[in-house]
Image (cartoon, rainbow, N blue to C red; front, side):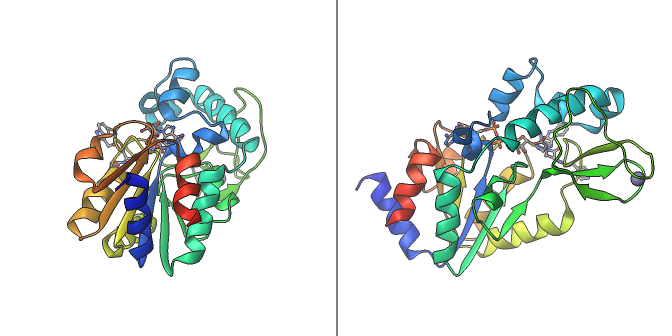
Length: 240
Ligand code: BV8
Ligand code: ZN
């Protein structure tokens, strides 16, 4: 039976679905993936830029990277993959969408139960006081942002070496432990603890299906692999 048929059958029998997405689901909205993005952006790698050390050492360069990405994301629209997941959520009583992305495109597509493991590029927070706020402005280049208290502000995202928001992480673990089907879409599955949700689903008895344009490290622990673009495959999967 073709993989898409088996995938449809898995979807039809699922009562409780969890989804884990990565940068790949936003690729067709014109947002380069991390491998693409870092390649595209002055040869920096996220592991070098998305860290508290990099920000302490050179906040202008880190803000320049985030201003560049905010501008890209501000001009991007959810693609057919994001929209298909929002439709799927409507048809399934128990549905949780866990994302590693900070672009907010799942919410823009109409998804409701979204857990942003790594925060949002649209929130900004103070480096000194507890103040955190939404900022949709598109400042230019190397401009630094400041809090009302006068201290330097930083992007409201989780950097490498930083802990994930504890309550969001706990909710994501619960969702994955209680689902009977986990869809893993557009992630290289190399960043932890997010990638650990896949073996956690398996050990909790869920079936796991992956949608990716290439083979990822989880390929040998999943039940079904659909190779192709999320923007093409998800509408086919969800339409039925
Ligand atoms: C933590 C937010 C510790 C910011 C991100 C050594 C030293 C230091 C740390 C570590 C270490 N070893 C391991 C670690 C832990 C580290 C980690 O996992 N490192 C990796 C690199 C090995 N993790 C952390 O540091 C985490 N925190 O561990 O805290 C701790 C514990 C206790 C107490 C104190 C501290 C924090 C990790 C979060 C980092 N923040 N982003 C921002 O976005 O600006 S991670 C960032 O990169 C993304 O959020 C995302 O999660 C990750 C990239 O992954 P993907 O989303 O998968 O994207 P990628 O480009 O890699 O892949 C795209 C995929 O899509 C590909 O497979 C491609 O084939 C596919 N694709 C492309 N197009 C399509 C497609 N698929 C379908 N359709 C298409 N059209
Ligand atoms: Zn402040």
